[in-house]
Length: 356
Image (cartoon, rainbow, N blue to C red; front, side, top):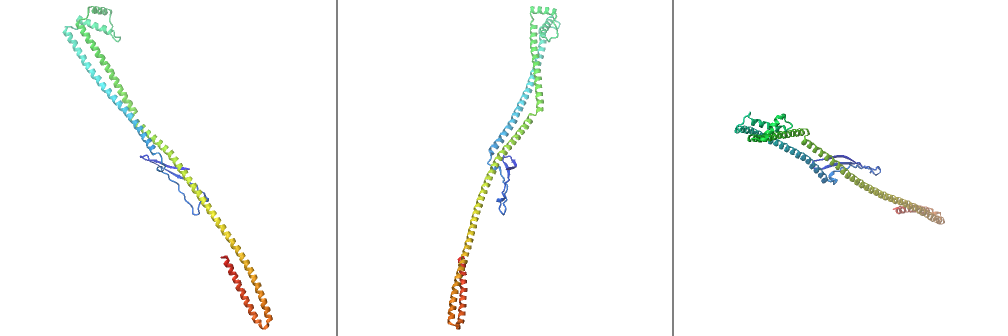
């Protein structure tokens, strides 16, 4: 059982993991003095974990975050370039319109010059026929406001049968050029309006979306998610290493416990043998003491019997020798008693020597 107490990371991708190992102790195996066992502190540096893998994940997350920013930045730069191109296009279209307007002014001057060249006045028949031809040509346009009358149509047919004058043909050619220039100006104005609307809409969209800010936020979120994932992976990896270390510690402790039990068993057998030896020695000493006492008793009995026989013999000899020798007899009896006392002391000493 392991308890995770902390997972910390620093800028170098080095992590430290502390674990407190709660060890169970058998009260019967505790010594009289007591034994304190401390929890183990395990460091990631001692776990031989995949630091290269962690660094690779971190670098990959950083590359992905930078790519997110670069992609958005590239899109933003592309949009800027497109906006600038649109602005330049608008300027070009405006320049073309200015040139077209200048050409229109030139056409008006050329018309005046033609009238002067061919000496045409506004109320001349040639000018009126030119205006009628212009009206009929304009009527072909469905958006034309003026309508051609039957009389005007008949006169138009007559003009076309007769053929146009040089003045009328030149004037109509100027009309075609004017029409083309007005169409160009109209198209340019339309394109300018489209470009300006696109620029405005793009600017408004960028103000609302904040692509660069969003990209930075997304990159930060990506890095944070990657960091949490790395911590989670590191936690699982370190937990596996810690569990392995704890199992190794348990196995080592188990081996030590078994060695201790075996040693205690050997000590107990040794003590039992010592006790058995002491008991056997004590019994041997008791048996020896009993034999000594028996031998002493038998020796004493034999000595007393021998001494009594000698006394009896001496007494009988004394009686036979006469009463005058009674004093000598008593002295001999005393000497015999003293001898007997010395014999008893010798026997006791012999018993003591046998015990040694």
